[in-house]
Length: 169
Image (tube, rainbow, N blue to C red; front, side, top):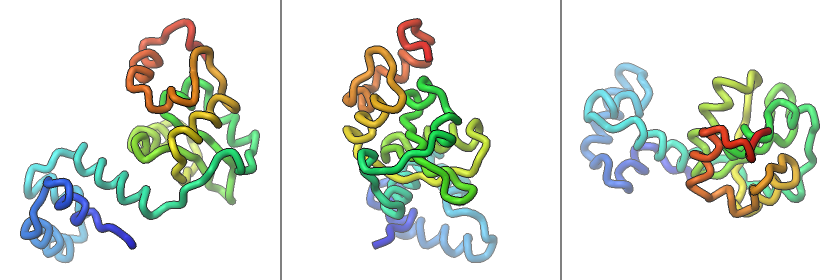
C-alpha cells in the first residue's frame, strides 16, 4: 500500500491531519509540491521532509539482493570506490538510459543528492538490506578496512570525508 507524504509526516509527529488537509487544499490550487508547501506554511524542516520522502520512496521501489543481480561494468565504472562507500551506492546495470543503483533507505537522501549532482546519467534507485549492500560493496568496490558492517557505521562518513590515506580510492 502506498504511503502518502502527509501521512508519513503525521505518523512521525511533524504535522497534524488538519495541517495536511490545509497543505493538500493549497496544493490543489497552486500545484506546488507538498513538501515545499509544508516548509512554507508550517515551517517544517526540509530534512524531516526528505526523511519522510525516503521512507515513501523505499516503500514504492523494489528491494533487491545484490548477490543475485547481474552487474554491468559500464555502470560500475561511473563511480569510484570511495564514492560507493561514502554514499552507500552500488551501481548495478543500465535499463535503457537509466542506471539502476542500490542503496539503503537510511542512505537514500545522500545517495540521491550525489547521483543528481555527480553521476551524469539518470538513476533509478532500488533498496537493499544493509548487510547485503555491504557484502556487495566489499566485493565490487573493495577498500582497506571496509567490511559488510561498515555500511551502517556512522563514523565511516567522517573518515571518508576527511580523506584518510588508508581509504584512498
